[in-house]
Length: 277
Ligand SMILES: Cc1ncc(C[n+]2csc(CCOP(=O)(O)OP(=O)(O)O)c2C)c(N)n1
Image (cartoon, rainbow, N blue to C red; front, top):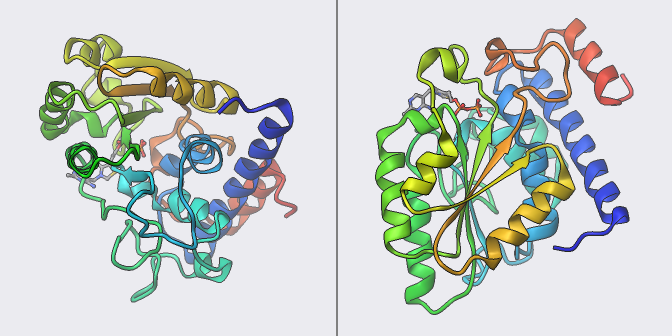
């Protein structure tokens, strides 16, 4: 919200630190999803450090903004963000995906403070977001509901039922973000099932559609501000991103969707990310 240059720099530093944390902890536990976590770093940074009304002291406050990581496999970036916001101690990050730990392989709203919805099975988050936005209206509350979608995830049929429903209900406090990195698990989105003109598709369903460079803090922040000016219905921000952003050997590679990071590549990644190793 009207961030100045100093704010941009501060948020860029946070994003940089989050990339180091994500790769460090994924390397430590030798499991998990780096590619789709790195592509969403700036999106979550802008949401949690500029846009969202939340307080780690009252994670269940009924007036808080809601966030759903519908592409739940990006749990590492969600956890790093929540930790950076103070929702739980840093030590927890090192226990990622361990049996019985707070930070499961996919977000679990019953275990992790700050997680508003358990996800992992793709395609469900937008429908839940509609429920939350309708609930806000019924309760006369003004919170926003944000839903992060993957572009591969958009191949799920339920997304398009939800895409039809949200404008029908005129849900102007619902903002979806598509992490448009062009790569899914088994290959590129274009090779597997192309999305065609995604902006035109959402527009045809009645959405306010914005686009932004998904790694540009200022552009993303401006897009969220603009989304909030639209009173007519839901907004989708199609954020152009790079899967594996920041780590050269991961960028644009579906192989790094979910794979353990060996020691020598971890060292290379840390150098590239400025992680001091
Ligand atoms: C219903 C369902 N089908 C399949 C999977 C397995 N799966 C996990 S991630 C993924 C690919 C998702 O691609 P995308 O949404 O583009 O995610 P990103 O590239 O942003 O990580 C698949 C098929 C799943 N989690 N849920």
